[in-house]
Image (cartoon, rainbow, N blue to C red; front, side, top):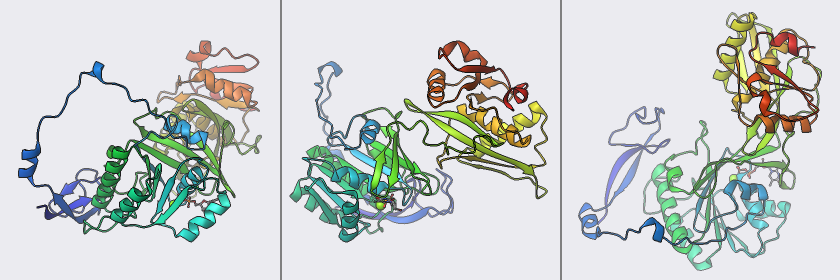
Amino acid sequence: MAKFKTVFVCQNCGYTAPKWSGRCSNCDSWNSFIEEVELKEDKQKAKITAVPGKVSPILEIEKNTFSRQKMFFSEFDRVLGGGLVPGSLVLLGGEPGIGKSTLILQSVLNLENSKVLYISGEESENQIKLRADRIGIKNTNCFIYTETNIEKILASIKELNPDLIVIDSIQTIASQELSSSPGTVSQIRECTRLLQEYAKSTSTPVILIGHINKDGDIAGPMSLEHIVDVVLQFEGDSNYFYRLLRPKKNRFGSTYEIGVFEMTGGGLKEISDPGNILLSGENLNLSGVSFGTIAEGSRTLMIEVQALVGNAVFSSPQRNATGFDSRRFQMLLAVVEKRLGLKLSQKDIFLNIAGGLKINDPAADLAVIAAVISSYFDKSLKENSCFIGEGGLSGQIKPVAFIEKRVSEASRLGFTKIYMPSSQKSEVKIKNIELITVPDIKDFVSKILK
Ligand code: TYD
Ligand code: MG
């Protein structure tokens, strides 16, 4: 007989404790413990059934050849490593309203020769139908089921026997065997475990949609990330149109490639040439605007950095960065202040990366420094310049990865002056472009301003 016992489970990381406490000792989050019923296996029974399993020499294992299910969008397939693997569990996370349901619904509505069961615990049949009509229905073998009870869901899955299962979202479904409410760690884990059992035994791929909490983790259990085969994140700013599909984990491919999409009135549109999507296309001659590059997988994207340096309004000056790590921004400002002698401590400084995406490529440092200098002196930067390089604490400009690809993309998009780390000059063989090498930021000011 299974025994019920209650434990306190951290809803952020899944850590369990016998007593409630205000702060999780595992992940340091506050107020995240909820009392849940824990299902304990009978230890005696486990001992009896433990017989040695089959172990195989690595050379004698035969490789299974499987065909991957293409997901309609080639950008989606690129991130998955060529399509969905049979029997795999894919977790798609993202903030509410970013377009997760749209991405998956649009993919499955366009699949041909594939029986899909789309289970929604969030929207009614009517709402889904309205959205489907807007996107366009090509796959007439697509079934919708609005249900939150996992036992009922599994029974329907077994009856329909679909080729692909979608759960929208994992936080809304629950098992009647557990008394905790939907969305708690034990419910999410149990439902995922049941779905995984079905997926592996029938080789049916399952896509789970999950919400993200304020720290950017898939809400509730980080532990879910260990269970599933693939974790994807759908990112972007809902005020802008561009969305990135980024793999965080992939057992069947690399986590290197990103997918780029645009949200339109008729659903998502994939963008196969995203080089200049983050450029606003204006303000080319204003002070405080510079251009740089970020490398995302095998692709390079141009970025537009906007800085505003003004006299401080209050006694403690403000530092505000949007789309850029604020601690890194503080570090770069400290370097500029110390190495160039600019009096930034009495200034309010704001930084914005155009396009609404968050970047974390250190190669953008030089563009950030250039934008701040340009705004400080209120002079625009030389026309068509692009800044590539990582800033070091002593003011030196450090080499970056994929330098030739970055320069080549900048050149393709019309930039003619490239400021880059001096140690990498020999790596760039591109013609018809002016390469200006920068060992450190000391004589940078005279070189970059108009
Ligand atoms: P949705 O897929 O519901 O987001 P999520 O499942 O991540 O919560 O997308 C919601 C937003 O997408 C909504 O604000 C409207 C927008 N949208 C479009 O702009 N065009 C469309 O064709 C569709 C279906 C949605
Ligand atoms: Mg949704």
